[in-house]
Image 1 (cartoon, rainbow, N blue to C red):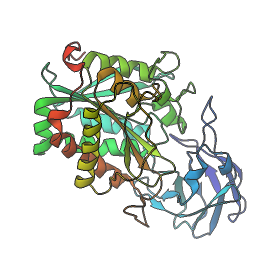
Image 2 (tube, one colour):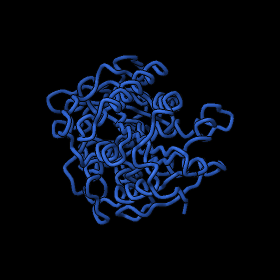
Image 3 (tube, one colour):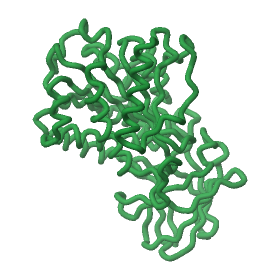
Length: 389
């Protein structure tokens, strides 16, 4: 007998019918207090060696239907190895076809990064003598907002901020953080050591614990899209942004990378803050050089494809990188990674994967090292001292 369930950390699906393995009918549940929907994650049990067709019947109502073009879902038997399965968007439905080899199999929009795994990441990082783990405060539902401060704070050091998963369904962002932290905290890595001699990294691996646990695509428990809250965050609606922004103002910011995933574009790319009022030729060249350097270091990153560039003065200032770049006069960027395979370097079995996201995270350390002397914000020197609570 087939059984479908998503009542676990990050799970999201509504099962309407599963008696016939050739016609399993499912729906994606919207974010709480919001109309966003696209993330799915569920377990199927009892279909070993049986051809299954799972129909996500409300795929046409999802937030980014262009994301279904060329998309293939992921599956796993062990929560560690996630592989792609046959997927087709047809007549407003997303069809997942698979013949499970074992009794229990998990399916998801992308490889999940659970809150348990997040807790493990924080615990592993905390074993390093280079790390101070602070809790900035609590989310709407009372989960901790974890900040890792890496490196010994001093007034003459650069302050680099990296945050991920403002949009909780973009789990590749925390896989990227996983790889980034693994390398930055490697005591035998000469480049990481050199950076930590001259800078402090402030890292928030998961900005949206509530949405992550609840299986949301884009919002927190209050229905707030955190990446539209940066101009005027509120402790009742978006405490995650308010608390991080306040700490940024204590430390100053010389570089900010906000890590995301994009549903539609099959590429890794950076979106800059060219539309802010304070954008200038110096920052434009720095952004160009950052992207070109990253492409040279890791060919999984590319510079040809991305979002349209806003005209100067036309930026949405509620977005993180626009607010941060304008306020601190620094280079702030949004990194986007695909839910799909990468068109530039395709992998038919795994597509864009946790492992590749981790390696992309590791590789940015070389980029920061090469451009270090040019990464400086105008307000960092006048910010309050970098004391740690």
